[in-house]
Length: 444
Ligand SMILES: [Zn+2]
Ligand SMILES: [Zn+2]
Image (cartoon, rainbow, N blue to C red; front, side, top):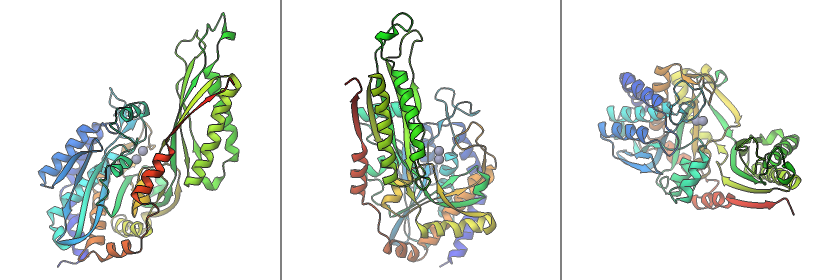
């Protein structure tokens, strides 16, 4: 049997040989960005690629997910290699889809390419014959939590329950046959160096808020109206005043937007809509800040005598990267980028549904460079296509070999010592418990 090191070298060479094809896949996805749960063209490209390399796979999971399977020579643990399919709306991005505004300003196109590249290399080299267990290359939908009004319509139509891709996949049982998961996210930040892992990420809940006032003639009889926009403004001021009560250690982020602020300038706004996340480092910190935000939202309605309907939706759980999986990512990433270009980071304040996965199984989200500009910004681009589309693939393939080589002893050991923070059932019950709508009447 070839050694771990030999196999790793072979998959890296196989990916090098596939460089042109991988760059083409990555750039094709980048030029055809699609929003979450609508990634039909991207999913079709993934499925077509799996067909070309003859990998059994299932499509249409949580609307657009594509899940493949590579079997080792012997039974053993299952490792999922995840790549996110979706783009997000970024105004002014040069590659934004003119119809939807979607742009790959988070680099998910490179993640999907990496999963395909790793799959190709594991097959090209016959590596699976020397591994135990299974590898599940998995293109997953809708990591970016946006397009909320449309997603809520899908919920009402019974097509979705949760608004994020991985929660939906968990709900449908598509992670039931997976023991651990790895994802590599592209980074454009210089401080992230060429590769690294953070200790953790914020989780969040998501809120949609509707103020109902009373429309009236804005010039002749404003005294007959109830200004829903002013009620919302007061609530936003109250949220801002509460920021001094948020403690640094909880890394709370509250960032409301007004999605409907009034429709006709000579009418007192009778209905105004807000959306916000409430993010934090722990579930307890999020729920505490969320309680304060609810109080602030009611205060705006109370002052103006308006009504407010506050809907709180399950968001994403805090991400806790599994220490040993992170170590596997690290040692293999360092082989590609060198130890001096690797960085171990602390806590990050963004949120991701990798957090949800990390509540129910060992999971790691690494970062690798290859992009420039601002994440979620109009200037985000893949600046080093060769690195962005091949180095992540190499690290995924090498990590899989590391964990599953021979009798998959490292993976078995890691799982033996692991107890998930939540079972799948506990996770689903927790997220379902977040879901609530409160109606508050400020006129009483
Ligand atoms: Zn993003
Ligand atoms: Zn992202």
